[in-house]
Amino acid sequence: MDITTLTIAQARADLDAKKYTSRELTQAYLSAIEKTDPSIHAYLEVWRDSALAEADAADTRIATGDVAPLTGIPLAIKDNILIHGRIASSSSKILEHYRATYDSTVILKLKAQGAVFLGRTNMDEFAMGSSTENSAYGATKNPLDSTRVPGGSSGGSAAAVAGGMAVAALGSDTGGSIRQPASHCGLVGLKPSYGAVSRFGLMPMGSSLDQIGPLTKTTTDARILFEAIRGHDENDGTSLPDYALAGGGKRIGVPRAFIEKGLDADVRALFDATLEKLKGAGYSIVDVDMPNLPYALPVYYIVCPAEVSTNLARYDGIRYGLSVQADTIQDVYKKTRAVGFGEEVRRRILTGTFVLSAGYSDAYYRKARAVRALIRADFDKAFATVDAIALPTAPGPAFKIGEKASDPLAMYLEDIFSVTANLAGVPAISVPSGTVARDGVALPVGFQLMGPLRGEGVLLAMGEDVERVRG
Ligand code: GLN
Image (cartoon, rainbow, N blue to C red; front, side, top):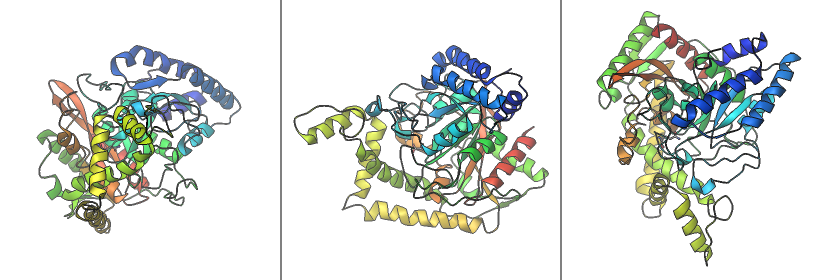
């Protein structure tokens, strides 16, 4: 078996045909991790013994014909998704030794299917970043070019899959953290509709923006993993009622004015070429007017830090993880948070506290919320005439390690095309569309499609078409 190209669909067929056992498959991935990960650092921790035990349990299920789509499939899990009894650190020093006291809903669903958990993956601290360089435990490298970042914040999950160290992985996406690493690592990444997948047991970053979703090698695999984790959950107050996935729809809108500037010329050319090929496959491609999209990035970088500053207030040195001793309770808070949080996390907390403060909340936070409503309205209006909206996933391919690390604004610009979907709450997918050359290396570039709320079925069907026309 060639595990570097193995998909969920193929592994399922092979396991069911008894070509190999889940133990053999899991063993192969554990060996690949041992060989490859010292130079990539996709994983923060590998769970060899429990993974093999889960594989054995899956093999018993397969022998009795009690098979679910993910029975015996080895997966990687982002470090901000809780698994009972396991450390979940969100790549932060403040949670270095924190062990989850319950299973997140997505993990419960995967456990019920008999999936195998290989380990927890590296990420930008508390999911803040676009390169995985903001991890307290060191950066992850892109397996396709180890001088470059894998994207972020779910860079460890993306690198694990692209590096042949997991069949598929779970990530989380608050402003692009599934789609952008998928784009940079040549994978499919799906950010579900807000409320489609339970956030229960996902460490919150921006609660009105966060969603868990799949990072996979193909659109078919994204569908399988999404189907496995989605569904209404009483433990998540923002969970949507269950809904069926509908396919169909061949009208794509392109907000041309928004992508005039700010992206690499060859990335732009690849985007246009993909649209042309879809046209050849029977799609209608039309311009749509979405005048408020240019405000999405500034709105995101007000709303997101505001939510971060309140969500991260819980890490006080008393309730979870790290606690630095001091004479007064105030000093415990201060010292624990000063030592426990990294630079980007502290920057967001400061920004968020500022935009929510009494003197400035009208000028920043409330204004941003009002503009967010206008952005949502742009989407609603566009979806009256088209089935999906196309945008590049990111302005360029994977960048060099260190290139943007000391320039937060350059890093934030990575998110210009992806944050739009999170602000509107709509689903979005990134599908590999080809490569561009940098320093003689062919680097993958994703093509992004956004659909109406509950429109994952449309996006997955279109994603399959992108794979077909890509050739
Ligand atoms: N890069 C964006 C940020 O830093 C998005 C992160 C995410 O989606 N978790 O906020």
